[in-house]
Image 1: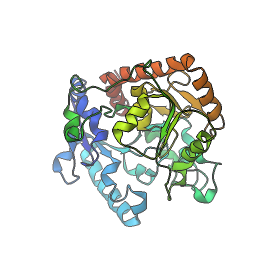
Image 2 (image 1 turned 90 degrees about the vertical axis):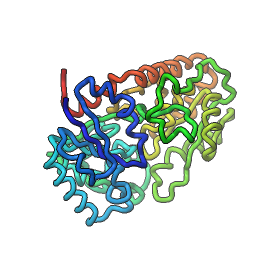
Image 3 (image 1 turned 120 degrees about the vertical axis):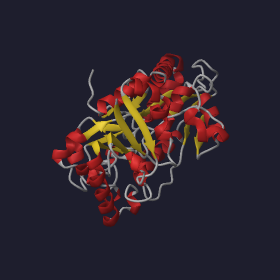
Image 4 (image 1 turned 45 degrees about the vertical axis):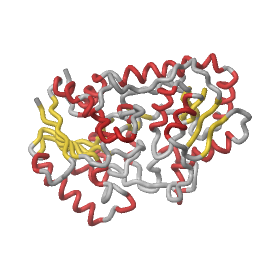
Length: 359
């Protein structure tokens, strides 16, 4: 049995959901997981593996707006000390994007895990100011508007590994009073509310989301383009700012198409909410990513469009007109998501892959 100690933010337990859900299955595979919410807890130390969720430091270094040479030095000192008590020290960059702002610490950990990783890894070595943290905005907006990142040293590139994406989070519709204990609620009693693909769908398109990000023009770039495109389409469209969770899910369940552009990152909650709702997922191509579990099969589980969205209007109109011919894509997406969601092997395999365990 190998020990796998986790340091996580107590205010961000959603990311811990698969560890709670598949705890027994991990132990059956020889991985003993313990979760801690304080870096001062001495029990965190002396472990075969110490796995740090980057959001633990969101009030300090991990928040780019609050990052300083002082708190970076403090973090590096802490990591260097902690490394003496671990077989392997693993950093989990929880940022939504395939890019990373966390490379300054990669030399102080043994492995550097991300939710999704670029297939062309050399991009991570790009010099400052020539590549954006969010790869899809390159050559799209002025250089002064991009978010540059500190590149990964070439000799540290081998440490970067794909972990797991947000498909393994908890997507059940749980009442607010039960949310604090959602990680402990049985899926046999509380299961996701899947909508039948053939349910009556009065909306052609559903697209909701925040577009006003004053300090992050990249985040709203594709969202604003979509709004412009939708304004020129004569279809039944649900769009605008955020609404209540209940109304949002009702719209998705009533829609033929769900649009899910890139924002803070390429993959988002809306993707998996779309599968549950039985709508057809249309989003920019994800062919540049390595991610697990891979729910995104082009033209099989989702409809890919170009990053500049020049083909989006044509795709929307064609799906709307020939909806019955596209239903299988919604069905495939929902079925694949169900299979991955209910199979512990995919998550156990992800952990084994990070630990370089082969059987």
